[in-house]
Amino acid sequence: MVALKALFMLVVLHLLSGGVTTSKTNNRNTAFTTSSVKYQYLNVQKLITAIKTRPSKATNYQEMSKNIDATSDADTKLKLKLVHRDAISVGNYSDHRKRLDDRMKRDLNRVRSLTRRLSHGGGVSYEVNDFGSEVISGMEQGSGEYFVRIGVGSPPRDQYMVIDSGSDIVWVQCQPCNQCYKQSDPVFDPSDSASFAGVSCSSTVCDRLENAGCQSGGCRYEVSYGDGSYTKGTLALETITLGSTMVHNVAIGCGHKNRGMFVGAAGLLGLGGGSMSFTGQLGGQTGGAFGYCLVSRGSNSYGSLVFGRDAMPVGAVWVPFVRNPRAPSFYYVALTGVGVGGVRVPVSEDVFQLNEFGQGGVVMDTGTAVTRLPLAAYVGLRDSFIAGTGGLPRMTGGVSIFDTCYDLSNYNMVRVPTVSFYFSSGPVLTLPARNFLIPVDEMGTFCFAFAPTSSKLSIIGNIQQEGIQISVDGANGYVGFGPNTC
Image (cartoon, rainbow, N blue to C red; front, side, top):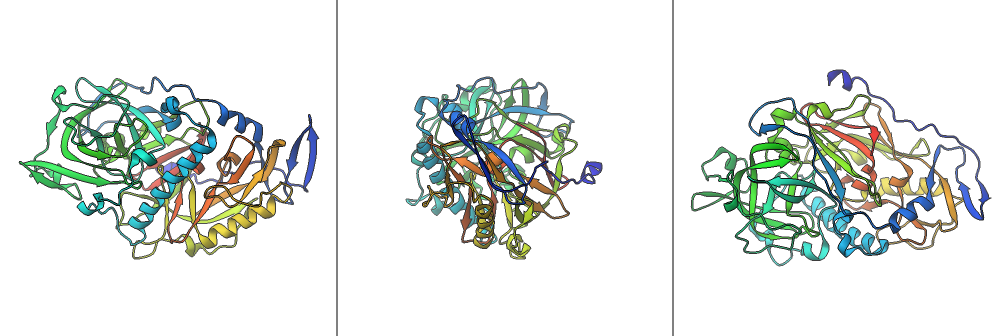
């Protein structure tokens, strides 16, 4: 990996530049909307068709084979198929605008929670009072955007699990269930598993929990999440099966009182930077490395979630993590600026800095949909994008959380200025056009998919991460972008 880190490179799209022109093709408009700036194409009609297509029912999620132990060291690669929530909610599939509105409601809850947790320089606070009347039901708002399918127990019981890069625990709903929400599979019953073993209060595993309790000698846990979901229960060691790969002695929460995790998920697979996350527990055998590729919205294909140093690609853009000792679970990156059309937006790098009190900074998060930027950075980015799209019909009002939208109903294809992230040490990540100009209805309305925040915290959301191979080398402190797509 040391050699890879030396191979910092720029992600450069080979783009042309030119004046603003508009042409007619088959009675549809194709707009070219640049003025001496770099640009790329966005296939408008392809995206509209994609969001109108009902996704196929997701099947065959698991791959790979090996028999390993969560406490052992091994050079191994484990792979799971990653699906968007739409693929497992086909029975309750609504039109795109309704799904967008629901997604943005979930997103606002997630961002509020992350801002509350991180803007004061602290990590997760697991207080009993957090589970009071102010909790918003995940059954109403929904939880999680991307899911994997794993087996829990011996014999393995297949379960859908939400992935969350900002969480540090693995848990599933368990029988007896004092309060459980509806899930697609039967609730896991530990009495049916030969490998289930409770964890005692005196165990070192219990000591690793930030908010452990004790009841009848058994270790108890409580965790709340960004959208108001929560889980309470007992801690146990259990076997997790990924395809035909068995991982023994994984510390999991067995949730007897849970709220949230809508759309059929049985629980959550935490991928955060802490020792109790799934990646943290696999640390020795996977070299502290994992990667994911989030499938694009409206696609019937699968993304992937891969564990192991063998998954680290050659040719990626490697960016250093920024450590926040007050919030070690989260993956902060050294973003220094944003750009439009190959030109850096004139915003101070200080806007993106993590200060000595653990405030501010830039977090990569799989659970947040839309990238949030501090107001000054957002306004500079948005205004630069508007200036580069003068040839497109801009709408007078916004949609949902978006304030910059276009009516592209009469276009087959448009050319738009590029949008880029600038990182410390030089790397530049240029996003695909579909990751920043997205359809918000089935009629051809597209919006600029960024949003402002009044806090110092920036969040790179999953819409901006879609279709890009992302590799997390936690052991060496780097995240890689590319070179492959999904």
